[in-house]
Amino acid sequence: ETGVTQSPTHLIKTRGQQVTLRCSSQSGHNTVSWYQQALGQGPQFIFQYYREEENGRGNFPPRFSGLQFPNYSSELNVNALELDDSALYLCASSVTGVVAEAFFGQGTRLTVV
Amino acid sequence: EDQVTQSPEALRLQEGESSSLNCSYTVSGLRGLFWYRQDPGKGPEFLFTLYSAGEEKEKERLKATLTKKESFLHITAPKPEDSATYLCAVQAGSGFQKLVFGTGTRLLVSP
Image (cartoon, rainbow over all chains, first blue to last red; front, side, top):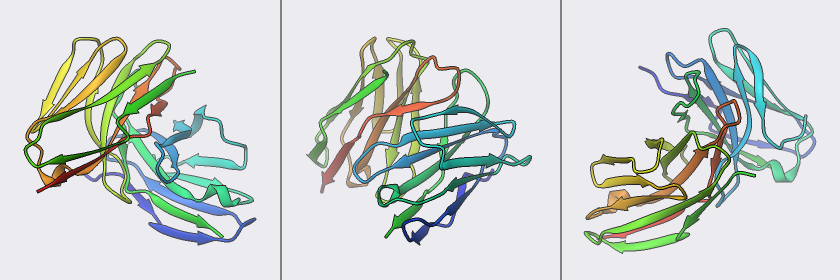
């Protein structure tokens, strides 16, 4: 059974640029969520995808967008990068249901300069 | 608004010195409370899910308990490899699987 994998592991971008982060879900999982974790803070929920549609969103602006593909892999896109977007971005996969354990990838460390 | 508060922020223990981490929460309709372990620069690693008050779960030196207002993570006879940040998260009745996290407790176990 493969776990959640994310790519790239590290990334440096310039303010104003766009970035795409990728995630492969754990085998058998059909729901993917993205979280942003600033240094010293807990992860903050960005959004969740199920059946290739966004079905829940946190307090993040529209320049944060995502996709889920038929094989349940996912992308997080961030446009017009700001310095405050520097963080660890985490992908979590789970099975659909009322309550389900979310399993996280190792994260992508994004630095905006 | 759903809120999770963890205490202490940091804890230093000697190897073998047992202690407890606290997670207090305010949510509308708790569906589950989760404990994760996070090593520096890595993603959170799932430890436990608790669903209702009175529930307890154990794994090696860790034991998690849940009341209507808080959860405790008890660490018995810790070892240096238990050093990590322990995160508590809740899932409330939002209709989708959104986790609300606390800021974590940084645990350092010295030999």
